[in-house]
Image (cartoon, rainbow, N blue to C red):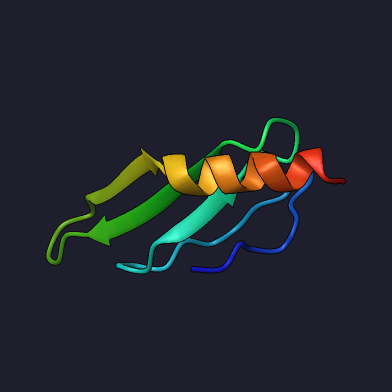
Amino acid sequence: MKYPKALHDGDSFELRDGVPMKHVCCDCGLVHIWDVKHTKGTRITVVTTQRDNRATAQRRRYMKGD
């Protein structure tokens, strides 16, 4: 799973139904996986987030090398 393009304060982004997306904080390197599921026949959209500990550790190691 690839990281999306860099976002800046006030930028918006689109999450596609059923397609997980990684979000990484450029300040601290914390990585979350966002997933959106839309329930057919209703206007309910479920957004789940989960911290990716492995990707966070990798990102923070990479940041130390900058």
